[in-house]
View 1 (cartoon, rainbow, N blue to C red):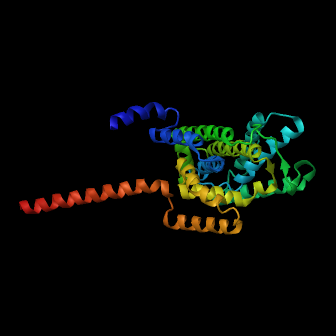
View 2 (view 1 turned 135 degrees about the vertical axis):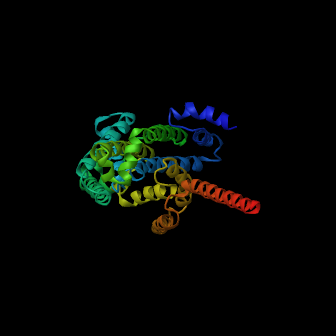
Length: 337
C-alpha cells in the first residue's frame, strides 16, 4: 500500500498535488453533477471563491508572517477594474479578470516596497490603510463606479445556471493550489519561512527581505485580483463594501482556523464554515460577532489551525509510544538484574 502511494505521489508532486488532494479535487469537481439543486451549486461556488482568496492570504500570513489587511481591497480592485474596462472599453471579461489580477499584483508590489523596512505588524497596518484609501476612492467617484448605488456588471455566461461558473472558479482554485504548493516546496518556500520566523536571521544567511517579500506579495495579490474579477462577473453588482474590512475578517478567519502555512487548510475551512455563515446572511451583525469569537477561540486553543491537529496528534502518539517502549526496556533490564 505504501509503495503504491509513493508511486502515485512522485508524478503528482511535480505539479503540486498529492494523491489525497487529487481525490479531494475530483470529488469537488463531481459535486455539481450530483447536487440536489441550484442552491447547493451556488454555495459551492461561494466556498471556492472565499477558499481561493484564503489560500492566497495564507501564502503571505502563513509563510512570511505578514497579514495583508488590505486583501479585500485588492480583490475589489480586480473586481472593479475588470467590470469598468468591460463597460467603458468593451474588453472581454475573461481578459479583464487577468488584467484585474495584474493591477492587484502591481498594488502588491507597491505595498511590498513601502513596507520593506517595517516589521510584520506595521506592514499589516499599512496594507490596511491602502485598502481604506482604495475603498474611499471607489466611493468618491460615483460618476464612474456608481458608488453605493452599485455598478452593474456583465455576466461571464448568458445563463442563469451556476454550473459554468463553478468550473471556472474550480479551475482557478486548482491552479492556485498547485502553483502555491510548488512555490512553498521550492527554495522560495524555504526563504519565505525563514523570513517569517526571524527576519534578522534570514538576512544573516543572505536572504533578501525585499526580494522575497515582494515576490510573495505580488503572487498573493495577483490571486486576489483575478478572483475579484471572477467575483464581479459572477455576482453581477459591485459596491465599495466589497473592499471593506469585513471581507478581510472573513478571509482571515478561514486562514487561521484552517491553519496558517498549510495552503489546503483555508480551502477546507471554507467548505466547512461558509455554508453555515451563508445560512446566517440575514443575521449580518451576529455573523461577524461569531467570526470574531471563532477567531479568538482558534488562536487561544488551536493556534496552528485544525488542519495541523492530526500531525500534532501523530507526534504525541509517537512520543508516548517511544516513552512506553523505553519504560518496558528499563523494566526488563531491572528484571534481568
